[in-house]
Image 1 (cartoon, rainbow, N blue to C red):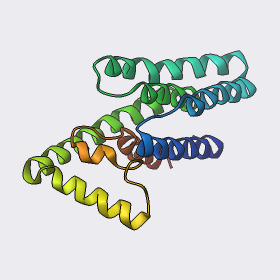
Image 2 (cartoon, rainbow, N blue to C red):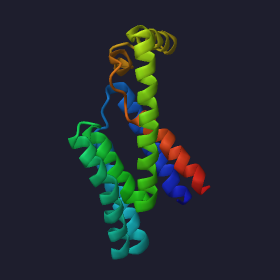
Image 3 (cartoon, helix red, strand yellow):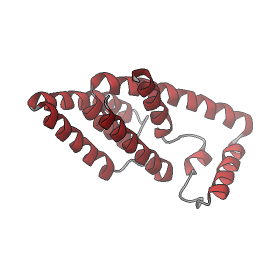
Image 4 (tube, helix red, strand yellow):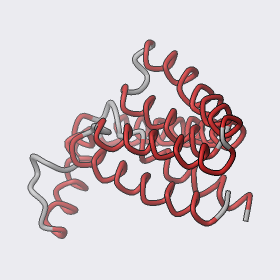
Length: 170
């Protein structure tokens, strides 16, 4: 990935992380413009060949996660996010991001199971209360997912996955 792609992906993922932590949603107002910009970028660089590259990358990011979405493993916003990422970074990088994100999500899930079985929901509620109090956030907006003990924002796995893949290519 060149500097422009890396910077665009970093900004995109940080906004997606923010919205996913705050409301457990990755909105269309974020994914659709990024997807469109990725196509425009590749078309400007390589014409029709760029459009094909973006389309193949988008498909590689979208289709496997759509199957995971149908199995109720992730939300639709995550599927669209990976489609948009694939349109910009291409097939191999988006597939690597997907692989690492799933591995990180599995590790986070195991940690949640261990913590919830050992301590119950008290630990998650206590940690979220500390973070809410220290950061000054309203409890209704942030970290509601932690109190459920059953699910978490997938972006908590996607961001480290992107950093892992990025570090492999730099």
